[in-house]
Each structure stands twice: as structure tokens, then as C-alpha cells.
Image 1 (spheres, rainbow, N blue to C red):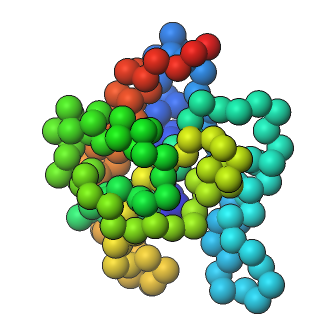
Image 2: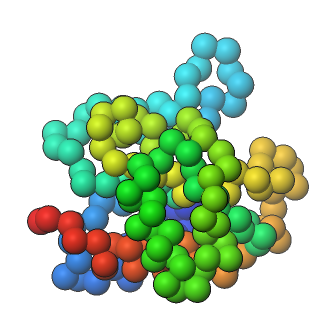
Length: 165
């Protein structure tokens, strides 16, 4: 369901205010090893994190967020401060029905290399998506409302966050 994250990032690119703090929209490949022997996980994000010449103030990964029955729980390895800010923004917008303020999963995902580098990072993911890695993962399982809830929440967080320039 990486396509849903791409859709949200492309819409953020289109709607981000011109006077916004600098925001990089980065698209990683080679996150999932497909159970191939000897092939490691999170290769794209790891290579990117290792190549950074400076430390971003925060990293937010959006993954598997298009589910028509969207339930995004707090991911246990994510930076708690940034995570709280994003969930607060969701609640202010009335999206607390999909941004559930309860920890459920702790996972290795594209946010991990940034956390290991000391960069606050958050994984926004609906890991309970029942069609993940199945042939039933079809467009009828995706919701524009789910994508909008995530996009609006991230835009609100970016606008409210007092990043230093």
C-alpha cells in the first residue's frame, strides 16, 4: 500500500503553502525484502539517512494509510514528542477516529534509520490492513477520506510546528 503514502505526499507537495518551512518529500524504495534470502529491510531509507549532510528536525513516514477502515495507532518506536504533536493536530481536525491515541505496534520501518541516527521520526501506519501483501489489495479497499484525513493532519502539523529555518 505504498501508493497511498505517495498520493498523500504528492498532494502535500501541491498544497503546501509557499511560505512554509522547508519540507522535503522523500520517496524510499527497497523497504520490504519480499522474503528474499540475504536481502535486508529498509535499504532505501537507510541509504538516505546515512547520506544526510545535516540533521532534519523531524521525519514522518506515511505507509499503508489508504485503508477505507483506517485505524492508525501510535507506533511504539516513534519519537513520542513528534508523535503527540501529530495526534494532537489530528484531534483538533476531528480525525481522532482514525488517529487512535493508543500504542499497538512497534515496528522496523523506514523511520528506523532516522531514529538510529538520533533524528526524531514517526511512523504513521495502519498495520492492521487485512489485505496487505495479498491479491485482495485492490483500489476498492482505498478511501479518499482516509487519504484526506492523513494529508490534512500533516499539513496542520507542519503549519503549527515551530521549526527553525
